[in-house]
Length: 233
Length: 313
Image (cartoon, rainbow over all chains, first blue to last red; front, side):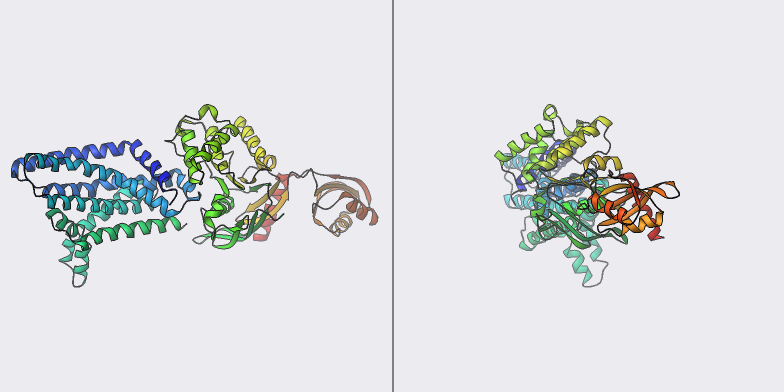
C-alpha cells in the first residue's frame, strides 16, 4: 500500500479542484439548514431524527454526483491507462478513490454536527441517538460511495455512472416496500437488503452490530467488485 | 545477450474479433523497433499487453525474463509507457504531474526530485514546468508524456503513435528525442506512417489484420538488402539467386531488355555480397552490378500486404 498516500492526495486535489464538491456541499447545507430550523421551531424538541432522515435522502441523491467522476473521467480521458500501467495494485487505486470520494460526505456530516452543537448549547438533548444517527449516516455514506465508485468503474460516461448509482441506491433504500408483495423467503431477503430498514435503528438510537455489518458488507462487496472490474481487461 | 523483449505466439481476442493472431517477436536491448501497420492491425493491442494494460488471450510476453501477466508489477516497473494521444492529468502542473508519476513508479521523495529535473531538462520542458498540463500545446503534451515514461529509468519504452497530431516541426523534434533514447533504452514505437518508422526505427515489424507479416532491418546501411543487375533470363536469375543460402526473397525490380534486369534480394544480415556474386558468375550469368540497397519500406509494405491479401483470398 505504498502508493495509497500519493493516489489519495491526487484524488483529493481533483475533488476539491472541481466545482461539483462546492456546489454539492452548498446545496446540502442550504436544504439541511432549512429542515433543521423548520423542525426545531415546529417541534421544539432536542432531537435530530428527522434531520438524519433528511440527510440520508440527500446522500442518496448527492453521493452519486460526487462519485460519478472517480473512474468514469479517467476512463474518458485515457488517464486510467497511465494508472493501470504503473506498478500500482488495483486495490490501492480503488481504496484511494473510495476514501477520497467519502471526503465530501464526511465534510457534510461534520458541518451537520453544528446542528447537534446548537441543541447542546440551547437544550439538553439525548446524545445517544445523536451519536448513533451520525454513525448511521457515516455508514450509509460509505455504502453509497462504494456503490457509486463501482458504477463509475463500469462506464466512461459520468452521467450514466451517476444515474446508475442513484438508481441502485434508491432501489436499495425502498426495497423493503417490495417485500410485502413477495412470497417467502424473498420478502425476508428484500427486507434484509433495505437501506432504510438498517438505517432506521441508527437514527432512532438503537445500535445493532448486524446493521453495522450490513453496511460494511455493502462497502466490501462493492469495493471488491470495483477491483475485479479494473482487473478484468 | 538475450533479447529484452520476447513475445511468443501472442494472441488477443476482443469477443469474437481476433485483434492479435499468434505474433512472435524478439527485441534486443537498446534496439528501436517500429510496429508498422494500418489502423486495426493490432499494434496498439500488442503494446497494451506489453505495458500490462491488457491481458493476452493466449501466448506469452516477457520483458527482461519477467512474464507480463504473472510478474505484472515487476514488469510494469521496468516499462515506460506513452499511450496513444498522450493522456495526462490536465488539472496538474507539468512538474506536479511528473512528481506524481515518479511516486507511482516507486521513486523516493529525494530520487523523484532528481529524476523529474533530469526528465524536464532532457525533454526541454523547463519553460513550461509550472504550466497546467491542460494549457499545453500538443507537442509539449507529447514531450511531457515521454518525460513521465522516462522516470524510473525503465529498460523498455513503449510509444504508441508518438508523432500523431504534431505539426512538421514538432514531428522532427520528436524524432530527435526518440532517436536520442536509442541505446540507453529499448524502444518499441508504433506508427501507421511508413516514413516515420523508417526514420526512427532500427527494425520494423509489419502487421496486418493482427498478424506479423515480417520483420526487417531498416537502419542497417543496406546490409541484408541488395540490388543485383544481371544479364540472363529471368527464370535462370531467379533460380540461381534463390538457391543461395540465406536468401529469403528475390524479386524483379525492373526489366531492361529480354535478358537484362535488376533484381532486389532480401537476405539474412550475415549474407555478404561476395556469396551472391559468386553464385551469379558460377551459374554462367553476367553480373553487371551488385550493391547494397536501402530498404524501400513502402514497397516492402505493399508487397507483404498484397501477399497477405492473396493468401486470404
